Image 1 (spheres, helix red, strand yellow):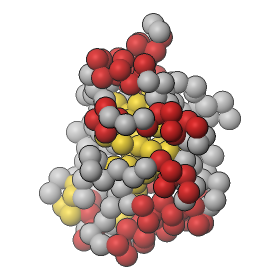
Image 2 (cartoon, one colour):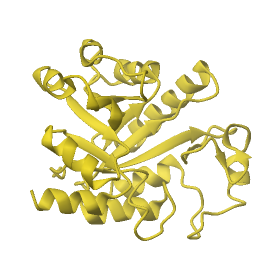
Image 3 (cartoon, one colour):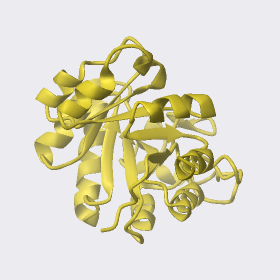
Image 4 (tube, one colour):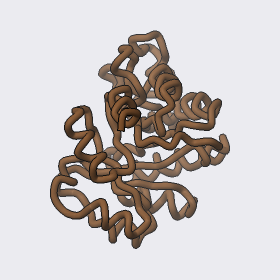
Amino acid sequence: MNWNKNKVIAHRGAFKKNGFPENSIASLKEAIRLKCYGSEFDVHLTKDNRIVVNHDDDFQGMPIAITTYEELRQKMLPNGEYLPTLENYLSEGMKQDHTKLILEIKVQSNFQATLKLTDAVLEMVKRLKAGAWVEYISFSYEALLRVLANDPDAKTAFLAEIDDELPVETLNRDHIQQADYDFNIYRTGNWFNRAHQLGMTINAWTVNDKKDMLALLENNIDFITTNEPELLLELLKNR
């Protein structure tokens, strides 16, 4: 494998500049073409236990958890794609070996449903032998612990909004290798040095403003998740 060595994670794929649907195969392909370090995407579980790639818990008004995949295929993304399954998405991503697939396990309607989704994701990744491509992120700490219980070598990152963040020392204790927080959290506190001293990485989301990107780069942030991967790649090129 020859993973890209930049700091750029395309949020829901590289969708914005070319008007691709978020979380589509097209936005994944564009993130790969741009040579981003990673392409982030979100997964949910359908009524018939198919894992689909979508940010919200509904697709064009159809609640994913109580809708079968065939029913979801009655509607299409604006570019003519069907809603991707995780199998579709991983299979496309595995055609290359330089952009990571940053898989967000979405918090479901209850704890058991989140763990059921987590188990289904792990089974799919194992079946496709996709482990080398995938990194796992989630707002569910328990989902990440479940991933690590099944695959101790998996790379995981805990997502947090303001007031939900945990100290990097807590993550490190539980073998979660990255803090992946709302970028405003990093405005105070010595996050970067503390994480790096522990051998951990720091990611910030969702950073779309040039000034904010530059401030994070000055602090030697490891990764930035952005809707503007082209802008961030240009800033990195000129540093």
